[in-house]
Length: 344
Ligand SMILES: NC(=O)c1ccc[n+]([C@@H]2O[C@H](COP(=O)([O-])OP(=O)(O)OC[C@H]3O[C@@H](n4cnc5c(N)ncnc54)[C@H](O)[C@@H]3O)[C@@H](O)[C@H]2O)c1
Ligand SMILES: [Zn+2]
Image (cartoon, rainbow, N blue to C red):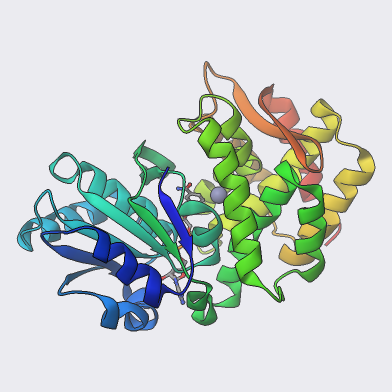
């Protein structure tokens, strides 16, 4: 497992760099993290080059990887080089993927600058890109050399992005810690202490990942909300109804909450509580009935789905999850109808 430090970046970054020698350092940024986050670390970086890519999920593609690999090549980064991923989950997933495949693998570290990346995406070693519109379709497992988290970066994050990341925090509570779920959702986005929230979410994720790094079993519980959520995210990707990752996962958690009641014994009271909290934070998105079939089609590309079965990670109760639950299409349709018919 990689080293995960939650501290001021002005000390964690020099500490990390002092421990090892790198022949060259490249920093991967997008236009937002270049403007808002790079200035917070540049003084603490030895000589380095920059690789800038356009922000956003629509750019998490092979084309962007080609430009990253070209830059690494042009800048003369060799196998002893280091790539610093400074950004959200898109930068971390794609920068990690490029580093892990460039010259058969160079070291990389993640400095997450979104809530979503700090609590979830930056640790655990899942790397990849979207392909032909399918989420995280090409990728591999490879741990970063370190994850350096500093909540200071969140100060410039737009509220919509903060809310998106918060859905992974809610997910951590729902799958593993009922008290945490109640505590974080009571304060919603006005957390008095993001440090503590990030630390607890990272702890929950770590405990799961360390027992099953390659996701052959237990790690699948971290995908609660993601089978239907990714189907929805993929469906709207690049359209004017584009949803952020966490927004799509919030809808996925409501739909999969419905399935959890139907198939895994989640009580009606707990389902209602989950729905009212998530809807209270994310509102309700209009998903037309004509979208249901293409959304389900996308779900067959989900990595949990095998042999034509739509496998889900579901809840037995708030704070306890289970995985590898095969769900038939009719139940998934019912779950989408359930969401569709919730009051606004
Ligand atoms: N690998 C994993 O385990 C894992 C887990 C969860 C999600 N993910 C992936 O993470 C991605 C979503 O990550 P995300 O929500 O961080 O999105 P993102 O990387 O697209 O960042 C969101 C936006 O915020 C901007 N931004 C970043 N930091 C900022 C800051 N400090 N101030 C102002 N703006 C800032 C970015 O430029 C971007 O426009 C998805 O592709 C998802 O599949 C991966
Ligand atoms: Zn996610």
